[in-house]
Image 1 (cartoon, rainbow, N blue to C red):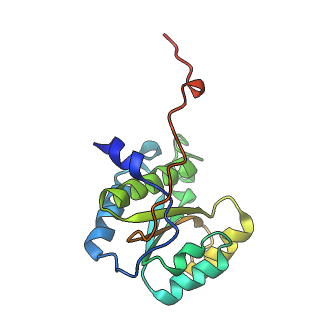
Image 2 (cartoon, rainbow, N blue to C red):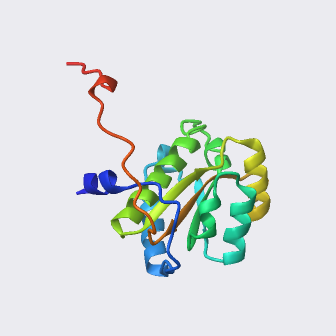
Length: 173
């Protein structure tokens, strides 16, 4: 059941040196690409990074991504706003942040289902972080670095931080 992965998922910031396989990476990317998007525009591309030098560089340029120093994989989600802006009907325009967020959540949950740890590090909408990550990834000018997701075998077990809160629910019958 998907709720089990949701309940057990935590932001992992310490990873073991065990490599993430190509098969595991493709499974997470498949989950991401099957995520919903406005008018099925799929305004994203993914950069799968296993290079130790590149992981360390990203840990250095992103102020809150030090966990990449021990992660064995980083999946960067790069938004493609132009895909939605160029639609003549205008319907999906501006929904790329939600669409990329859905893709990120799919990666996080699939990583958990594979027994891997992960940590979502936001890039967008912080201008300085976007510029630094864009330079590190070599993204095109019309692309937006949306987030970095550190992934690897867990070397810690953080306590749960969220819970169901009835006070946050309004029932309309």
